[in-house]
Amino acid sequence: MSRLQKFKRIVVKIGSSLLVDRETGLKESWLHSIASDIAKLREAGCEVLVVSSGAIALGRTVLGLAATSIKLEESQAAAAAGQIALARVYSEALGKHDLKAGQILLTLGDTEERRRYLNARATINTLLRLGAVPIINENDSVATGEIRYGDNDRLAARVATMVSADLLILLSDIDGLYSAPPTADKSAHFIEQVDVITPEIEAMAGDAGTELSRGGMVTKIEAGKIATLAGTAMVISSGKELNPLQALSDGAKSTWFKPTSTPVNARKKWIAGQMEFCGKITVDEGASGALLSGKSLLPAGVNTIEGDFHRGDIVEILNHDGSVLGRGQIAYDAPDAKQIIGRKSGEIAEILGYAGRAAMIHRDDMILNKGK
Ligand code: GLU
Image (cartoon, rainbow, N blue to C red; front, side, top):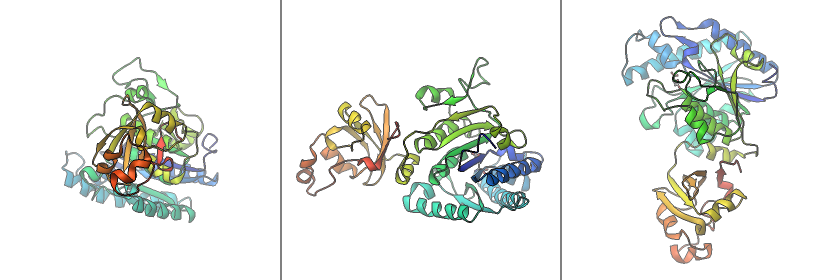
């Protein structure tokens, strides 16, 4: 496990197509091969967490829905039947190596609301401390619409940042990032390493696709943004062959995404991983420079504010040209924030009738794309 050996805590995301065959169901030999890879990593002193898809796909075979196109409530029923089977097979496969599995099913609110986030994190950390391998999935049988992650790439990134993993491995039938979607552009070349996820890198992923093709490169790049911003490296590699972690460790083809170099504290990791913003704050050039040099955002440096947010919500911070500078937890409700933009901090009490915070977003509550 040489290439993976330097990592201490690894989240492995397993795509449905690796685990489940539409016709025949579970791919048992593949599952046993990854269980043996996990056992080797554990022997090398590395903690491993698994974010596994496959509940819906497996449940469709279990319930005899494999050949038909299914409605939402049927796919939720499939998730219920599939998840219980998935949990059992993970537990058996890891058990062969004397490892215990512990199942965690998350919904979006479990990572977006800080109190629930801390609770989920404590449970997962306790499982790890007790030597178990957490097997995590979205709670698909109850999560719907806007309260879903919808894809396990971003869920896995969120979990990786939550537990301060140093590596996130995305295993699927895609071996990495190409300069353009290779199915559409035969001249596309393979990208081995991404230092920073720029708009050019995002464009390489192609379109967001449809509900059916979710989990493609677009969600993987989104996952990369969440992970790298919080200091977790990410790698995309094919899991099609047996023992994919061993293969990756031995140098298999893959795309590596570098994490930001600055250490990120736990609170900032939560901010970095937030998936939805309640508002947008555009700052002037002077403020952009000040933030990049490690200062807090004062009302005087704010040009415009959009959105209906409350104090404590996460908002996106934009440069004056509209490019994204970072995100942070705002210290004011939207109506109050709007009243104090462009004003000196000393004037806040007089304008609002109460002494609010001098900073609209404190530097400890902020994370910039530069990783500060
Ligand atoms: N949570 C879904 C499942 O277990 C998979 C979502 C995805 O593939 O990204 O079936």
